[in-house]
Image (cartoon, rainbow, N blue to C red; front, side, top):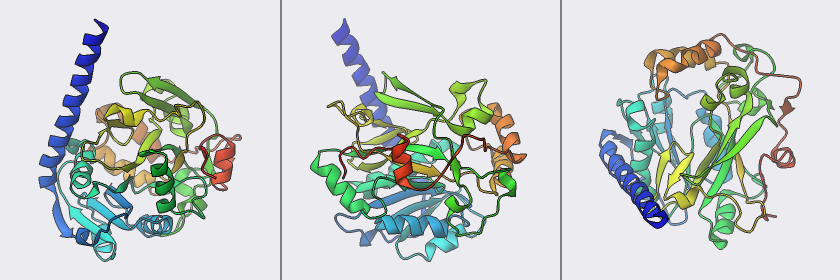
Length: 340
């Protein structure tokens, strides 16, 4: 009975992966090229894939950060921005850009569009899939670029770099912080929770589920199961068989989610600095509450949007001030895992 059950379960996951691939192929038809520079992609290039809307204030630093890390090409879907993001991106020489007016929610929150581009352009490349408010850091990122990191991972037959999504916030009400477009957001959002996290394995997907941080502490203390999921798999050596099943939290085949070190040690991991709580968060929350494009059940999150619109103060006396990757490693939020 056990073998039969395992066979049926494996078949169901394989079928789910195949359907995700088919969805990606179909949803790719919703994308209209604005400027396509993918013909300039070269073997060995590390690629960055993004879906965004109205991120003009973040984009200059976002691109600068990832260019410094060694991203060679950006493949970006603009979901009908109205703030000049599209024109700005089209002028960037290393950006290929697509536009769509289709529903973000109906595309699995943009993942179907990402799947279409990953299938078409990502095969054989290390691909970083992030949001515009996520900045990847990892041990030695200030001196060792992504190509060095991916070479090290490949030498160990590893195909995924896991990362903890770490919410950054200011001291004081989020809507009163001062931030200049293009400025390093960590200068404005200088604080984070270094503890208050729970970890549990998910036997069905073989993934690790991490929750906690300021959003759960402030907005979901009574319903922690609705708090944000914080482990992501953003950097992957892409194969045509791969799909993201749940944002970038879970992948198929399920073996990609098994991010623990099989030898029992610590595995190399990074952190996604989450810069959601810039002063614009109130206006963005008001817009998203109206658009209803986020969350599977948007009505259940109205109180969350209302709290963000009001400009909460997420800081607390035990918050840690961000000072770089060595501090994050020392607090156990990332690991070198033998990487120097």
